[in-house]
Image 1: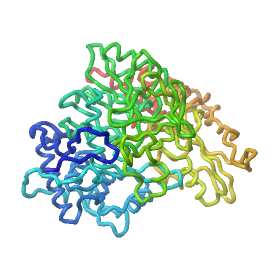
Image 2 (image 1 turned 45 degrees about the vertical axis):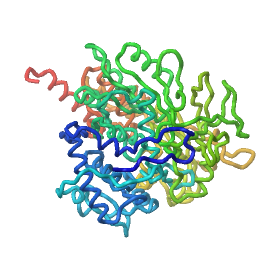
Image 3 (image 1 turned 180 degrees about the vertical axis):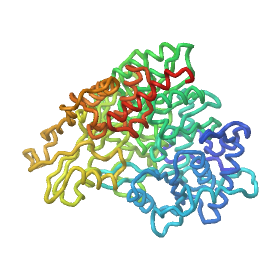
Image 4 (image 1 turned 135 degrees about the horizontal axis):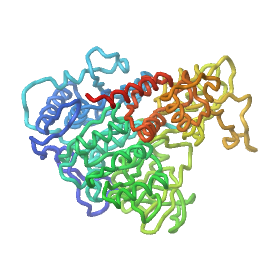
Length: 602
């Protein structure tokens, strides 16, 4: 078995060491369900046996402590087994979302110095030249059944590397150790968040984002992981059905995706034992009040979680209730908050400043970036142990009574968009690298086709079109980082200091108004057109208009199906919007759904 973990630098004097996650995983009842995915349930006994086979074959390839194994696998049972098997071998995992552009996948593998890439199938195109690739099925193939004996590690042994957007134009890998990941689970339990013994936790986040860590660590204490596929994640009706059918006790979700789900999580037959772990972006006052009312009725309980990847996912937690407006709560037990002014002096209650985080869950730093690590991971100004560090978050907060914090925004070029953390300079660098672009600036605006979105401003030095820009950026950036609108400028406005005056950049043109000269619409087309107009802010919508060409995107598609359900009483899947982006086609599909619902055989 793994050794008891030593205290890491910065651990509070006298604090009890936290058992390694795999020590706890070894104790889960063998016949309890560990993972539900792809229509099949796998027990903890099956998971441990599979993880040992994977770990043994990884070890045979020279993988061990401080090795990095890139997991290029979709969310599912194979990902869970590969992740646990990698940790069982003492190594660290690097999540690489198969949906990322090929260039970005290659960059992650090469920049992290991955020792091995695990893929879903044999013969997959290599992510990076010179790095061995192996199919997960080959690692997990049947073999001798061995007792579950993970490789011994220390608390500082690398557990995972997760990449975040980079201010230099390149993503940066955050290194987190095993003790920090173990402490996260213990603190979620200690704060009363993970309370249901043997709970059923929905894995909702992409493995490339740190919120997924919060979900798989629950597996290690014996909770059941229910894998949520992309179609279900994107459709509130399907997600609500899964919550019911799988009797989920915990669901991690962003505010943008929680809002359309709430109407479907308010049954008339009594309360449900569901905890929403909401985070990734600020909660609006209206959503806060709505969640608080549902909590008062006993329908669900909601905790607002905040934390940077650099501090092992969750740093603060605040229960959503009706007593206060939106806040991010106070620090979880293993972290300490410092709210400091520009001279690093503590601010008084009611004052605002930059948030710094200290304690044993502060990460090791940025992989291969010593200068950037030194800039963001700094000496703790009030450290309780020699050599303690604190992480400079770049987030501005206000110190409320009782140590609670109100989030005010960013102090730099980093933004949050639909739950994704990204650096505007990285997007700007990608736009500027497109042939024909002489200068570029990217901002986050609230008025992009009726919703928050990125706007790219550019000055052309050659032939360049919006379609060409979008195509090039889609090939190198994740979908959430591709700007929603592009604005060509003859010259950029500048401040008196000669810098781009971002406040003076013009608003993007409104979404196309649709076909004002369209022929008369059918009844169903009229209904759909009215919903489109409300969601997209387009005053005139015709039967041949395209939802996405009018400014639609994934979040608006979710709002669209919610509006259709509320106004027409029809459950329209989100995938139907993507399959039928033209209004006449979506209206025809809706007619089919209405007819099926009215059929006596339905």
